[in-house]
Image (cartoon, rainbow, N blue to C red; front, side, top):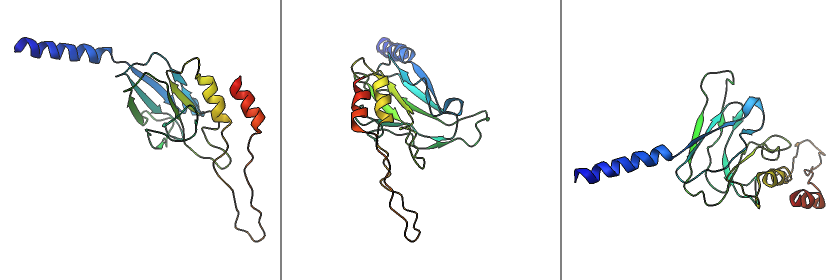
Length: 175
């Protein structure tokens, strides 16, 4: 009985030693980036710690087909009031299924665009068929989700946001 308990404890210790912890800085150097912007070789049980270093960012799971649309876990917004401080908010994700790529974006919205549309995306285990570069291009070409703006002033006009021309989007995605 003692031997089997010791063997289980030893196997658990070995398994936890093998699990890797990756660090990703969100808002690195006060910019709209994840650093690094993708990780490869991540396996089940590994964890990814997102350290929020500036502004008010989030880490939201999406899909390759819809890079700026929430489709899974989310860190929620993590506000950094003092980017020169000593401690920063951290959110850790444990990878439970590394058999397919995982896709993420920052869901912060600005008046005329989003952080995702600015290319603030991240991937775990991208492939040659579904590359990080293609995912990022697709995020930049995502139409702005704000449907209209209206000032409320008398005789003001409804203004629709511009959308990229479809042939350009198709060309960028095929590149």
